[in-house]
Length: 111
Length: 115
Image (cartoon, rainbow over all chains, first blue to last red; front, side, top):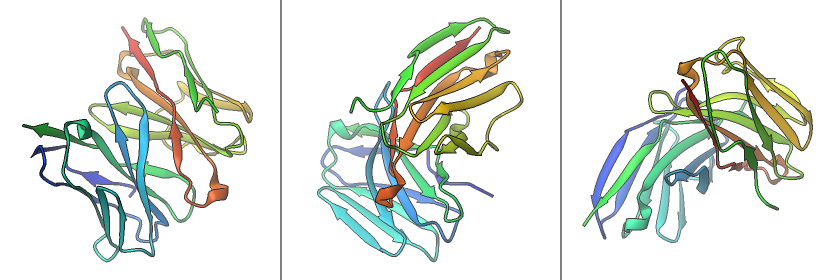
């Protein structure tokens, strides 16, 4: 079936790295995405990775893709209070352009 | 571009009433998606359109829900009659597949409360 799974909560100390994990179902997904949602707002794209890549780095963000295990992760280095938000993993199905989201991981930052 | 525009931002209605949510996608985008967000079920895909044509409506909960896209700059999601369990935030998003990545741009959402 169509299912993207994430843990619901993550708490990290300010300045530490945050790692948010995701598993997806379609082994031939073409693109995988990370979106961020701040309170009362819509989702905004953080980054995406094409399925033929293993890693993508963009400033404080590092995305790792393990196609064999259908596992995607997002690492945020030097986590700041402004990073508090809900982070969604999503996959684009190869057979169509439908994009399915996980339930989101709520990241909270403690001092 | 002003981004994806949704209206109303907030709607409170009584059970049994008709609700119409509206969306204006980004000009030139060829895909439009409707999602529903609740605490219990997360972000669910309801329906999506390509060039104004519905492609997959398998996520529409039941016959009370309908969506249309009469032209490239406007879409509606209608619930009739509404029920308390329809209370959620409804998001519209559009994308441009010519870039390949099909990155979605979301609207700010319409928060629906059905009493």
